[in-house]
Image (cartoon, rainbow, N blue to C red; front, side, top):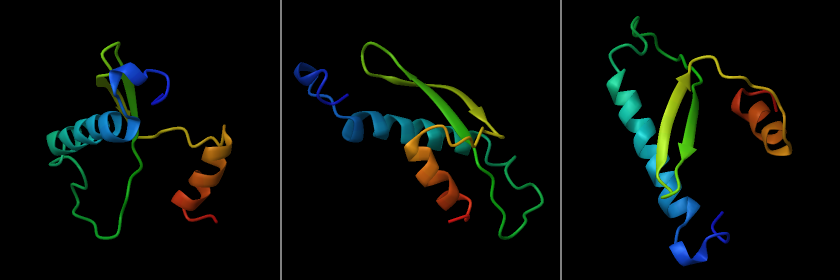
Length: 88
């Protein structure tokens, strides 16, 4: 996407990723009192974040899934998912 709109001087890493990280952070802060209510040590949960990008290259958070699909539907996911859940 960086090369598709060079006149916008837009970067996935410098612009889009920063926006998505900030939206993720805001959402986690908003529900922080609901996460790990039992105060368990050594626990984790995987969240699936869905974003959309508008015509001005602004990222919008659509939804957060607490039980995202972990289907290896692409070569990237085939590499990342097993490493993420410890099956490598």
